[in-house]
Image 1 (cartoon, rainbow, N blue to C red):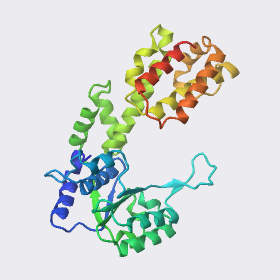
Image 2: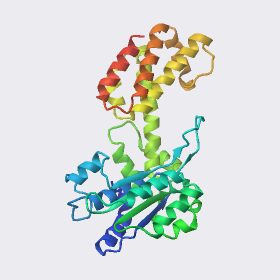
Image 3: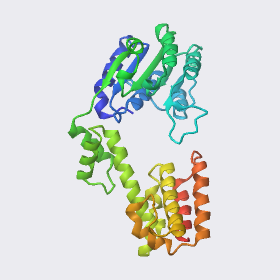
Image 4: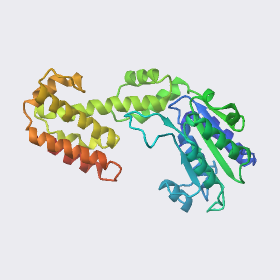
Amino acid sequence: MIYPWQQSQWQQVTQLIESGRLPHALFLHGNQGLGKVAFAVSLANALLCQHPTEDKQACGSCQSCQLLAADTHPDLHYLRPLAAENSTSKKPALSIRIDNVRDLCDKLNQTSQYGGYRIAIIEQADQLTLAAANSLLKTLEEPGKEVLMILTSARLHRLPVTIRSRCQLLRFTVPEQSQALSWLKASEQGSDVGDEQIRQALSYASGSPLSALDNLQTVEQQQLLAEAMTAAISGKPSLEYAAKLAKFTKLQTLEGMLSWTSDLSRMIACGPDTEIINSQYRSKLQVLSKKVNQQRLFRFHDQLNFNIQHASIALNEQLLWENLLLSWDNL
């Protein structure tokens, strides 16, 4: 996807493609929330597409585009920061290690399976370890034919100069406020979010539209989930919230539900004044804690954990929320 504020960068890239001057490495730099990775993916899709459109974007229907949509194209590779395999921390440090880079470079050295580009997208390239950066440098210095490496980062200064100097820099800047607000309003059309909330979210996100959208959706999701979980207090069936919850990220909503069951369990075991996660809804949780059956609550907690563990499995999400909310109403 090319966002409205990325048009000038897209024009730069398409001009390079048309003139045959596309470099072997691009460095996409700019604040978080500007869509650098989405831009990189759009560029990769366009280059790998068998029948690109007049404006150099992917057609979306050829065999390559179908493989790209399924995330199975053999000539497109991703490299992202990962936690160390032996890490036991709840919030482990993330990095791109030398083994990951060597594996990527080996793939880029292989012959293209579709006779075109071999492309690597390296997200948060500033997380490369020194050894990994040095290993990557060898491929940047001697790239194979039709190899393109696209690096993204919001922290240009943290990447070694030797890496930066071998990439063509493409800067992404915060869009005009009017453009960002217009896009956010269109994205939130049909929601209960007001213009002032959108303006505040954009301000908190330092003008980055995608970060602002994440903030808005998180707030909206929390409010909607709270309404669903407390609907029984006012005699409303929570089931009517299923379709609305289905538009949010499944894992985050499941974890949000789990926090409510944890809070109820704590209140039942330790009393109404115990420390809880959703403290802003303490009074409503107190009412619920007097109504629920503890054994059913434990079973519902297990049901949520099961769905969290299998969150990657594609399901009819509205049906999932209907089943969970029905179980919640019957606690």
